[in-house]
Length: 342
Image 1 (cartoon, one colour):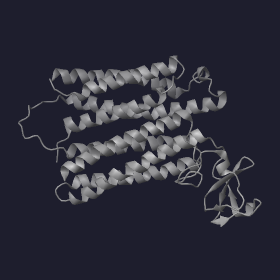
Image 2 (cartoon, helix red, strand yellow):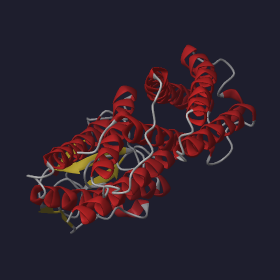
Image 3 (cartoon, helix red, strand yellow):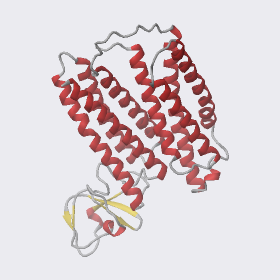
Image 4 (cartoon, helix red, strand yellow):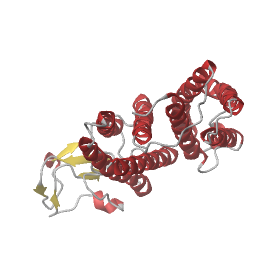
């Protein structure tokens, strides 16, 4: 049972990373409002593929919440009804939640796929929770962790709705991103504590006191850097509204967060390089540090490409996904080197 729990926790973690990738693509393509309602999309479980599907149709059975576009405004059906030959607006409620009233099939389906991935991710997480109940007595910490993951996913789903309702409020998007990092940490905790114990005698490693401080500083800086990155991304979104997709103009006059974000990357490199040197000095055979250094290197490369080559395609989502991967690697290193298994 514990082995099955561990496998499901790993599957759940992979699903969360796929959601982050999908969310990054949504942000890169500006598809966040591709579906103007939630949890359905234009009032449908499967969204429209062409504009004619959301235009008024006579003698058509509409369900409550379904959307039509009339004179460049979205209207929502108040209840189930069959339309007459002519449009009667008394059956419809005008969109007042946000100013988005545009249909773009590409944006719609990118956002819809993002939502589908989120829904599918809930399946292994739900099964994980059910299995954890059977492990409750000997592994109460895993049950509590699974409950927190379920609650976290519920909060993220609710927050996703409020993000749509608020027409992509920047601070809500930031909280949405930080919430996914907390879920990653919880799943990594579950994975670590459900791993089978190694019965072979292990080499005793004496960690210098500075190791703990450097490691915690490294992951804290990563968290702060991601937070700043979301603020920089918001600035870019505003520049897109001002200049369109003339990428060379986006960073002509960067905001303060951009300069802090860029400068902090130097500190992150130095802190993690120090961590690497400490691990090598105490002769700890820990491959995670090699992956951490590799991911940081790729982060720097994608950051340079975005700044000097005007945001080449895929660099933005890759930059975000790498930061999530870096956080996960650092957090798991903390678990392996400072936390004893239950």
